[in-house]
Image (cartoon, rainbow, N blue to C red):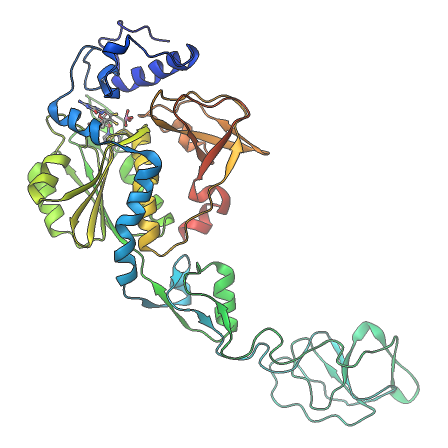
Length: 466
Ligand SMILES: Nc1nc2c(c(=O)[nH]1)N[C@H]1C(S)=C(S)[C@@H](COP(=O)(O)OP(=O)(O)OC[C@H]3O[C@@H](n4cnc5c(N)ncnc54)[C@H](O)[C@@H]3O)O[C@H]1N2
Ligand code: MOO
């Protein structure tokens, strides 16, 4: 726990967490006298690079705090921003292979009856009338066309999936028949009329709607579509996303050295965005170059540009000034969430948005799930997931005023908060199954918390990235 007043020289983000711990342990008392606790949470949080508790935020920072959006509203706003665009997107025709994970743009209507002919459900004999039966020599296999008509008292060996000969009354399973004198076939038990015959159209008739528009194409849907006669599907196209990684301090290989650090977001965001249904058209590292950022934003053809870093008010934080220069409309400018509160959402042109993720890696994850996910989900036509909660196995510290997103693992019917959940840390999220939504003030052990699933946790890594 860090006592107020001894914070000079400490990392601003860590102080944030420490302070929150102190507040929670002290029963959510304000950190300092009310006169000092302005409506601007940051004013008490030592944000910025190394300044103390008395430092006043820049005019820009102050402006952003007052406009910060509550966490749940920010998600709604991000989804709404894409809604009018989503209905105007032209469906694409894709092969079944390429359709996995997309959303059907039109109902899946059967192109055939299923089964498309009367089919044997078992290996055995197709029989006509009551037994015993005279057995034909040549059997019927799956894939063969037009078996000859049976007459009463006749049987023919038949395989599962083979066409039923006309006038067959039932199929006798191989384990239920025995061959008697003169090679005649006797039933081992009573046979119902129609037994073990799958009649044509049992599952659907040609023209029946099998799935509505808006259904997500899962592996099972691919199987159904193939069975129903489809080679291609009409689907909502993947939203196109361009990722712009900002920061001169970033290395793309080797170990950190001389004040330089590894870019953790370049490797992380594209596959995460793909798991959210996006097509990542480019990943570009632009350094801290305002002109390069301006050029990138004016020339991009993506539906969504995701930037990382540069969202705050430091000397090389170019995102806000560049958006102003472009005349972009800020739809969300700061969110009441930790980590990640400087995240933003802007409309650059009528059909192009930008999500600005803060540079701290867990703050970037928070922005990804808070703003990019609802926007991409809406553009991709995916359904809104049903919110769900689990009780927390241990208490989770909260921020006094903001929502917190805390990495958790799911154990039995509980969510267990993980350590190493500071804004600059990925150690917790890398081990997590989900993020718990911790309300302002924190959550007790046993309290239900809403969970945001990580796309790979339930489905397995291969299922969501291929
Ligand atoms: N005056 C203020 N200063 C800061 C505020 C504020 O509100 N007012 N907010 C703080 C918070 S909270 C965060 S989060 C950061 C957000 O900063 P930026 O989005 O401008 O990001 P940077 O300053 O560029 O980077 C922050 C931090 O993250 C590291 N980083 C950046 N990119 C990457 C990457 N691709 N991989 C790994 N690490 C990355 C960067 O080196 C910095 O350490 O601002 C606070 N300041
Ligand atoms: O500290 Mo910041 O909360 O990483 O967004």
